[in-house]
Length: 455
Ligand code: MN
Ligand code: MN
Image (cartoon, rainbow, N blue to C red):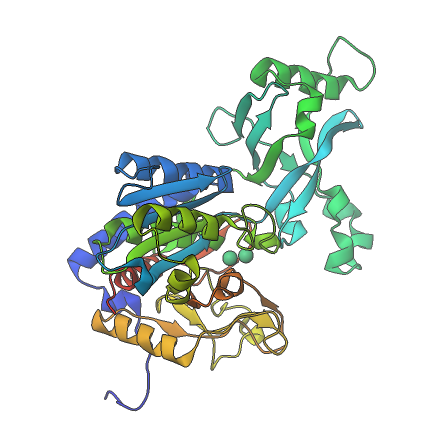
């Protein structure tokens, strides 16, 4: 019997069990796996969004009603003009396009024991042992002194070789076994194997020389070009269904490209609303949102200022932002079946029960976080209830167990109403993250309802 006094989270598989919803869910899941396979860096993600938006008629000229602008190929803003004045605020969804990975160091190439290696420096929160003994790819750009950009994507097609980082064999790991994880796996040993055969042109590091010769023949680059390159080491291979029932989506970079894809899809499906709809993709969230393309940058305010100038010249950007309703679209850590003890089960989300509200993030006493107002959360519940969209309210982990941050606090400073709201991801920050096909579907419904919400 339904108890009207108690809230029961709704399972998305049951809510969306019609043939029509199931078919739409399958199409969405397949599209997402394809997106995830092809977008493994912030640059690739922003390029994908730009290309698709331009194909759909979005303009880089702000005189138009549907516009797109990217910044340094790493952040992008899309906007669709509403029927109401900008003074009534925006409906804004922000997600981040960067993901934890390994960057090549400035002096990456060296040779040891007749093997050529490239040194790395990790970006974001990784568990180092997860990157060992697995196929890796390199994605990025190399810019020559004359300004020419060489795009690199190696390790993804069946014909490509892959790279890898070696691990020590168990037979000789007795010392390693006794160490803490922090000490057993150290960053300076995250060196990527790039070659083994020697060049005949020199006796000094001939294997490294051979790698340089191949780089020169393939990309027209020399060692000095590597110093200015942005080359990221990422897990090689396709994103895949997981489970006999193909109900789970597995692949690298779902934090936060799961939200990027859900928000982009919802934005494109949404009809023009009363308020102007905005999608904003940030870079550098995984390292604190600093820099020219992170959420602490001027990109949002400056771009919106230009937009206001074109659409409603006498409207102040601060007034627009203070009336804005926003979602920080970022993934949540639901209950892990094998590590339930790190969660507070009374406040934990479950995979398959829809996108998750997180009123605040931060750590140890809500430090370093913004928090959504009661008024805003109530408004949002109303929007979702109207469409019977499943959702959950949760906190991340036990109090004092750890924590995390999102772009919400960096955007809340403008006075907008903002809350973290996104689907759950298991094995978060690993080379193979897992999400629910049903949660993705519900999240797109939720984001679309938000974009089209009135008042
Ligand atoms: Mn995230
Ligand atoms: Mn993250």
